[in-house]
Amino acid sequence: MDDIAQATGLGKGSLYGAFGDKGKLFHRVFGDWCTAVVEVAEGRLAGGPDAEALARLSGYVHLMAENTASDTERRGCLLAKGAAELAQRDPTVAGRSAETMTALLTLLRKEISAAQRHGDIDSAADPERLAALLLTVVRGIEAVGKAGLAPETLRNIADTALAVLPMPEGQKRLATGHSPGRENQLGAITAR
Image (tube, rainbow, N blue to C red; front, side, top):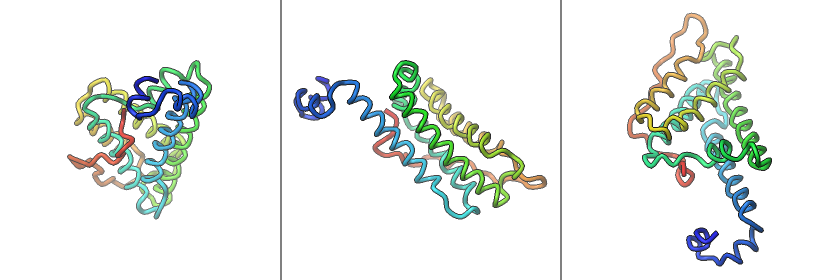
């Protein structure tokens, strides 16, 4: 609390008055972070024409890889850290983590279904399973990035994940590769 008081210029009494205790303050910050993570995904995956669904999926997956690649201090994500370290013993963190992952999964599933309707992804494939795969890849990119894999490897993981999405029979996917130097678009909520 001393560090927070110093950084904000508020007294510890004011902080305790506003949040109650350290746990409540953490839950507030964690909840705000989870909201921001979903908002970033919604900004990329919030629908639109079915003809653009695959491009939206590609943009989101590449954005997440690029954000991790640009995190040169390997700070990681509060959602990932909170879930990994606290979810087992903190029901608030566990619940908020699950809600966030469910929201991300839903956004991905809707875009996959749209890409299937347009004929960019095989309509026989299960959109729930494909969404779970992409969610796992996106969240896993962060973990391996924090462990020190090279930025280009992270970008290649994103490319590979998109390349394995099943195409309708007889069709070939156009390249969905990343563009070097892509701007970090998470802004204020980049990995901490």
